[in-house]
Image 1 (tube, rainbow, N blue to C red):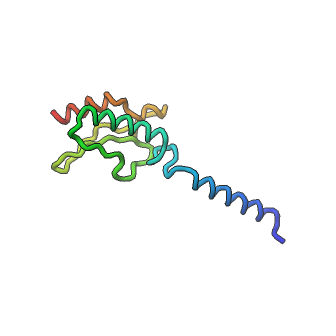
Image 2: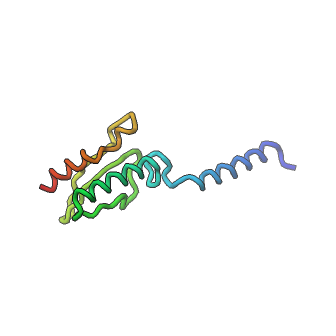
Image 3: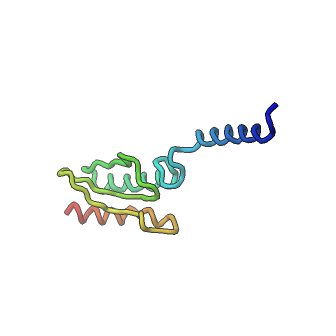
Length: 112
């Protein structure tokens, strides 16, 4: 006969495993699938595509840094220029994400 503690621990472990399967990969804290990140990334990529249709926009070709929202311009010669980083901004959390017009102004500086 199992003791009470073991049974409760086993049930808690099963519940935690089920909850973990239901959550997206990164959760809300800056992960790849987080709702805040995804919404802001989609809005920004749409604004960039409308402003400069000749550019290719990639959203997270690699896993992002934790707690950051960064926009980088990758040039044909292999160099890169950082258009926005929210790493040192906030709280509140909304300061970590740029308004599209701010990034578009920076993009215009680098393209001209």
